[in-house]
Image 1 (cartoon, rainbow, N blue to C red):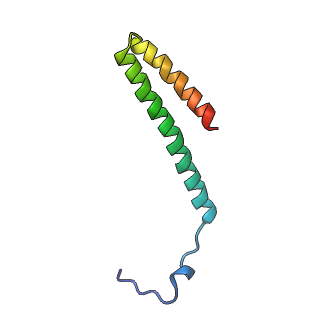
Image 2: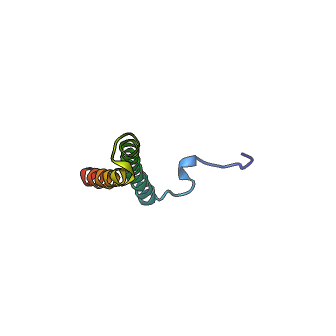
Image 3: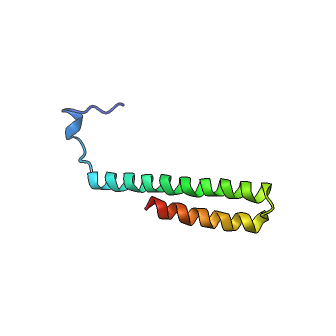
Amino acid sequence: MSEHHTGPVETGASMNYAEHEKTYGLFIAGAKYGTVVLAALMIAMAAGFFTAGGFFGGLVLFVVLTVAGIFLLR
């Protein structure tokens, strides 16, 4: 705030656009795959707690849903 710049802001520091796009791509991929894993976890927990599947049934369902979701997102 106390700095006094002379000239337009656009000519200030040069931007590394390739690095920005790489970071954006990683953020989008993390959001996509993280959403799939969390959705699979919620479904597997519901199946494990509210059905006769139990812990191992929920675990198997979690793995199957996670693998299927990741396969479908590619």
